[in-house]
Amino acid sequence: MPGFSTADQISDVSGRGVGMDVVRRNINDLGGHVQISSKEGRGSTIRIRLPLTLAILDGQLVRVGKEVYIISLLAIVETIQVARERVNTLAGRTEVFRLRDEYLPVVKLCDQFGVEPDSRSAEDGLLVVVEADGKRAGVLVDDLLAQQQVVIKSLESNFKSVSGIAGATILGDGTVALIIDVPGLIRSVAAQSGAAAAHAA
Amino acid sequence: MSTAKAAASADRSATETSEQYLTFMLAGEEYGVDILRVQEIKGWDKVTRIPHTPGYVLGVINLRGAVVPILDLRRRFGLETIDFGPTTVVIVLRATSGRDERTVGVVVDAVSEVYNVDPADTKPPPDVCGGVDTVFVKALATIEEKMLILLDIDRLIGSSIADELLPAVVAA
Image (cartoon, rainbow over the protein chains, first blue to last red):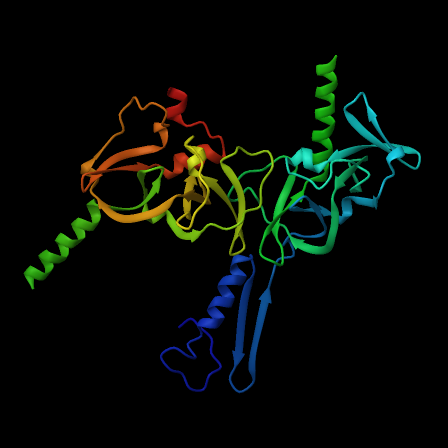
């Protein structure tokens, strides 16, 4: 008989050990397992083993217009507000800003992801300086929200991989938020400006 | 005893040959999907948009912890879009492609009925169908003098999401 019960008295519905069966199924779904051993008169030992590979990420929630995205804290170097005089436009296209002794490209998430932002100009929003594969860029967002740990859920399992997106997660209010693929974003921006340069030439 | 057995076997043969289809409305036409592929029907709720996707991919929702994409079937079929109303629903379907199984929601105008359709009563779609992508149409069925368009879920979802080139499309 499957099931585990501590009840002295059982009825048609209560004390049938269904609860532990639910626990077991949920843990199996996560790739773990439950082991129960009991000795009469002594007690029971319940061992729950879970894999460590549940992908959890420390994330910074950022807002662009009405959308919320997550950037891995590991990729973030710093977050700054830039003054207008520190933002320049190269050849009328790519915006760069000066961060101490470096010039970094401004990546506008609103343009990359096609969402309507509060503002398109770099001095009204916040620049999240990110780094991946030794390259840096300033990602323009409207606002910084909370920092929290998020569980990475794959987009591929029911959909497909999307460029610039590493995955998705479910926030506390039940909505889905997309996790930004920082290396992919920097690569695609480099490819776009390269294509634009080639087109101009 | 023997009559009961005969009745039982007749019952079984009826369930074996006829297939149940859930039908829904889309721009005045009634479409049917294999009911065994329907996971659930839920009301329209806000979605999280996904960048770099075609217009008919409305976004993703949280379906009890799973991230599930939502497709707008009107846009997928190139029909005029309407504002979502009180009857607008999301039909959550399970589609397979190869070994993978996907759970995907489709937005339709309204759910209609569940019909028993005998495969013998269905007709293949005509070869020439102006404007309608007949690759997704598995068959046409006539129920109570109405035409039902039976959809091939796997082809519909597969071509909508994975840009999988279907043999029929390649041949065409």
